[in-house]
Length: 345
Image (cartoon, rainbow, N blue to C red; front, side, top):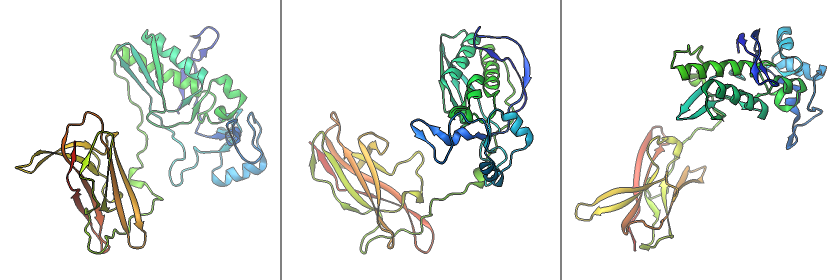
C-alpha cells in the first residue's frame, strides 16, 4: 500500500476529524501471528500480545528475507517475524497491491473487502460507506478479489494480538482502507470516474503445481473406455438411486468447464432414438465419483448415481458418461458411453 492522504476515523465522535499523510508498509507478519488463537494455538514459545523480538527467531527470519530498518519502524509496535513483503521466491508471499470494490443493489451497499476485518474495524467501514451513500443497509463481503489477511483498528493494532500481528500493511491499514472505500462510494453515488490504479501482478504463466501428473490410463482386457460395467436395474420408482459404473480415464485429462462428466437422458422418441438431457452432474440429485482401481495398470472407474426426485416425469432414461483418457504412448483422446435404458414407473 502506497502513501495515502487519509481522514483518520474518530471512534468517539464517529466522524472524520482531520487529514494527515500516512504510509502503508510492505507486508509483514508479527510474532503473535505464530501464537495462533485460543481455538487454535501455535507451537513453540509464541504468545499473543508480543511486542518485542527474539534474536533466535530474527536470525531465522533474516535467513528467509530480512526486513529493513524502515520496515521495522513502519510496522511498530509489531515485531516482524516474517518479512513477507521482501520474500519473492517463488512468487510474492503476500500482495503489495489489493483490489477493493463497492457495489450498489437497490438500497443495499456491498463493500467487497480483500481481507478479514475485525468487528470494530468492520463497523467503522460500514459507518463510512453508509454516511456517504445515505444507505441504511451496508454489508461487508469478504474475502473478495484477493486475500490480505486481517484488518484491525489502530487501537487493536497496538495490543498485537493474533489479528493485529496479521494486519500486514501496518498500523494505518484501516485508515487507508477507510479512505479508499470513501473514494469508491463517492464515485459510485455520483457516477464519476475513478482511476483504477495499478494492476495486481499476474502469475498465471509462472504457476507451479505439486499435483502429480496423469501418466497414463489403462482399460481392462476386452473392455473399452466408456463401457458400462455396472448396469442399472430395469425399473425404478421415486426415491430410488440409480447406480452405474463406467470404464473411465482420469478426470484431469480434460476439465469439462461448462460441460459435464455425466448426464441423465430421457427418451423423447423411440422411433427416432431421440434423447434429451434431463439432469446433469451439477444437479443435487446426481453424484459423479471417480475412483482409481490400479495405479500400476492405470485403470479407473466412474461411478454415477442419480437419486430420482419426486415429480420426475415417468418414462425411459439412461446414464451418459463423458471423459478423456491418456494413452500410454502419448496423446489424450475423448470417449463417451451409455448405460442400458431403464424405466421410471
